[in-house]
Length: 199
Image 1: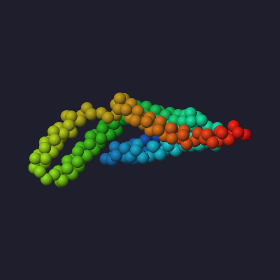
Image 2: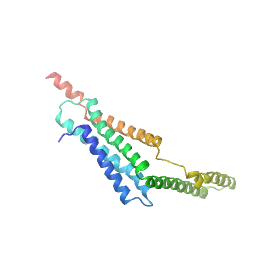
Image 3: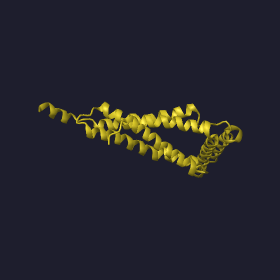
Image 4: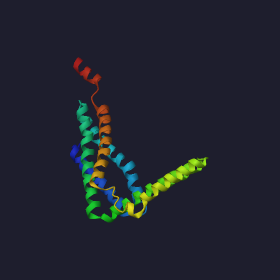
C-alpha cells in the first residue's frame, strides 16, 4: 500500500515518540543517558532509513519513470517531518513537562564526560615513561577537574533550544545523504530511457 510522504512522516514521528517514552518509563535510571545515546545512534537511524526506503520503494513500484528529484523527495520528506516533529515534542517534554528528566540527562552527560577524562588520563599515564611528561599530564588533569565541580555544572544544560537546533542540523545531514543515495539508486536509469526512445 502506497502512503504519502507526509503520512509516513507522521508514522515515523509516532514511532519515535513511542521509543522515547519506552526509554523514559523503563530505562530512566542510572543508564538513562547511555540508553538514549544508543537509541539515537543505532535504533532511530535504522527506523528512519527503513521508512525512507519504504517510501521510495512503493513509489518506484508504481511508476515506470522515477526522476532523481522524485526519489529524493520521497525519501527526505518523511524523515524530515518525523524528525522535526520529534525534536519539537521531546524538547517541549523535557523543558516543560518533566524537568527532572532533563536534570538527570544533564547530570549523566557530565558524569560521562568525567569518566572519559579519567579513562584517558589513566591510560595516558600508564604508557608515559618520563617524569616530566607525567607531571605535565597531572597538571592538565588537575586543571580540568574544577570544570566538573558542583558549582561549575549546576547551570550546565545540553538540552536548550540552541542545542536541539544543533542536534537537528546534524540529523539533517544524515537525511540528505541518505536521500541522495536513494535518489541515485531508484531513479530511472539512462539505459531504460534510451530503450524507450528507440522504440
